[in-house]
Length: 114
Image (cartoon, rainbow, N blue to C red; front, top):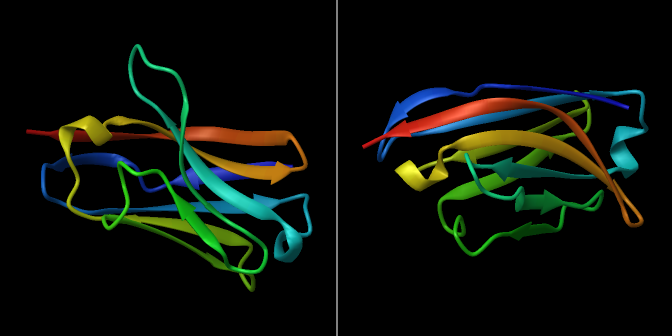
């Protein structure tokens, strides 16, 4: 599986970013996808997930601000991030979940300045 994330960058607090992840090597339409993040000095944490059927789940810290979506025609999963806060600064990883296993792609850095 290859998961190519993009869209990270530097943004001011209150701003928005949209992350994209292009997947290959999998049957994307039946894959459960997600985003995790890891802030400096902290453990990696789940941000949001979306099942093959479109059911979404969010960490409490991002509910109401972030939206995960997918485009099965383009084998791509998105993370729309609004009202960004400095504490959202992290490397964001695209993931594919299968049973108890999580496959991670390379990360994209999001930096939110105050």
